[in-house]
Length: 414
Image 1: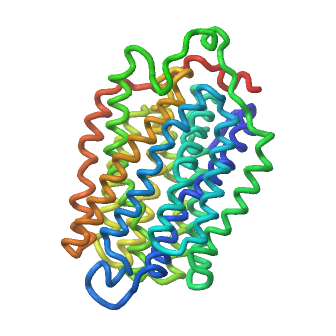
Image 2 (image 1 turned 90 degrees about the vertical axis):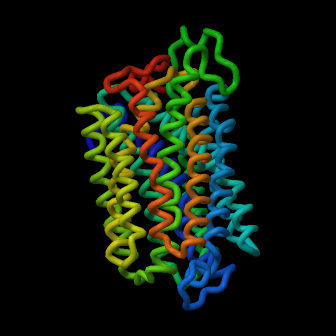
Image 3 (image 1 turned 180 degrees about the vertical axis):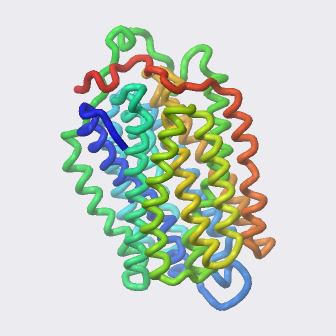
């Protein structure tokens, strides 16, 4: 992934911050199996509650609460349009990681959900703002590549968390995993002074800003289409990724060594997805890249929950590939559709749309898994929303090659 030399330092700094946010965000997913075992009761049987330790409904609702908490990331992200990118991104990331560390002291499952939920919106806002900042620090020709780089950082953070969990599985439990979040927290604090603030165009800075959270006159319809797209994709991707380690460990009984190898290989497939997705987004268009990536996530999830250890491994790797493929075009697309003065606000609304779609998907998936006794049936029903996602995508303009309005991009930083 080749980046202009002027972007190297800013992108690397934002990438590390994104990595830290990814590490903190993914803790609940990676440790879900251990959490269910710690606060539930695993026995040999055919039902979801017997295999997982807690019912699919309890797990689905718990994960949905975590996702729902992220909706507070909307006003947090919006504040970046008023207070600046640097102070908000660093502060939200630090607060979110501190809450993740605190979750190690959870005395029960619902306490775990509550404490982890406190930090979730801050990390969601931090990740959204990392993408905004990266878009504003890059030129049109290198924007998708820069966003792919930062997205890779987030994915690497999540992967390191999953690998750490796999290595510590059966040794320290989920509490030890959450305490390791102190490491990325310290790194973010040390990097704070090196964070670049994008330089805005003076003339636009002097104009009247839209109201708090507003995207301005004539932009609401476009925003609603973008939010519909994000909701539909999130309704599929959230349950597809959130139950994967619980399913692999407690239902498919994937051996620890195989799980570790799977996670390591996922880094390669994710990188391949980012590179190929970036190429398509830059040379063919943002919309085709989003369409292919979204469909790929749904098909990979169906394979993952089809049953059997090989299906779990193949589905997981293909899902990471598809997610990586979607990321460069998807993140560039939403940032290129709106001007600088409302770009963080749009990112905040994106968090809200992602939450609503994710919560719906998680609750539906968990409930159907309980009632049918099958993760496969739950997957078949839950992953249909990819169809409306493609409809919303067709109603939005292509943005490949667009220069961002209201920022000097890679040409100046402060």
